[in-house]
Length: 405
Image (cartoon, rainbow, N blue to C red; front, side, top):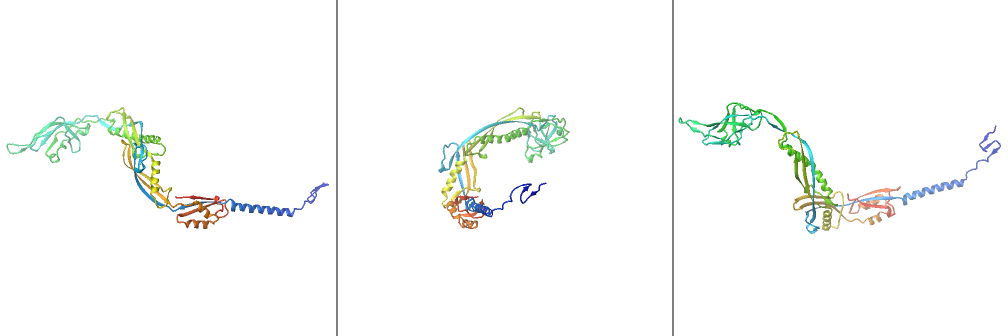
């Protein structure tokens, strides 16, 4: 049986020669190649690939201004000298139907009635009409069934004062058992307060005949609330229709929208006996709109031209452009607007010059250089593809950005 010879790599009578020894020169070249490749890659990340984003935060100064402008739908072009701008009147229409439950009630029972004696302690005849209110101590209201005159008080032959009196029929203002009042006084509240204790009525016997039968009806509040709820729902829809009509740059101010009810349709009448009813409201919305972008552009130009400090107007997240409606007349298509602005101005920064100054500087020196300038208050660095925090010598790899916050 043949054995395997590891030294000769032989099996049986056939074998290969001994493993050749490795070449030392070949091993050195391999090490040298890897080292050169490593140095080359390091060089790329030190001199070629590095890139830096430099964010510069300039010093800014706030300026505030107030302007009064006129928007006029009758103008065809801008009158910037007088701050007058063309406007446009747009009008839309819509309708909405909804069903509502009734909440009113009505007592269709009988009204209490009976006789009352009226007394007059004054020296003048006192007339009462069917419109005068007679009220009990509990607040139940009655009326006389026909006009009467309460005789004046007189002096008898014996020298005694005899009060004038007359008996008349009265009826309760409202149906219901509450009108079946017990004997007591009735105050004529239409008379001056000084006379109410001298001219009054007295119920001698309990009033009768008042009965209660309450039914559900459409009340005045039901109709008013239904119309209001429909309008509350219609207004956002009409406003959206106005927005759809806006051209590019135009602004819609809620204070310059006028809503009008054109028609109200309902299939019920006031105090009709129903449990629910349907109402349809047809309404319109009219608005005065203007090109806010054009107004803003011209106002910004005025602010820029009025600045004599050498600083430039810059755009920031703190900018304010507030519009307040001072006065308007949609029939004439005019509106006076108050515009309050708050902007930032800053000295110009030469980015090309700064880029040249930053080349090859370490980060701490670059930061110190930038902060030493009067018009820069902060600087931020973000290095990419770099093994160091050194600004690249290649200016194309230095990305400068202004952030006015």
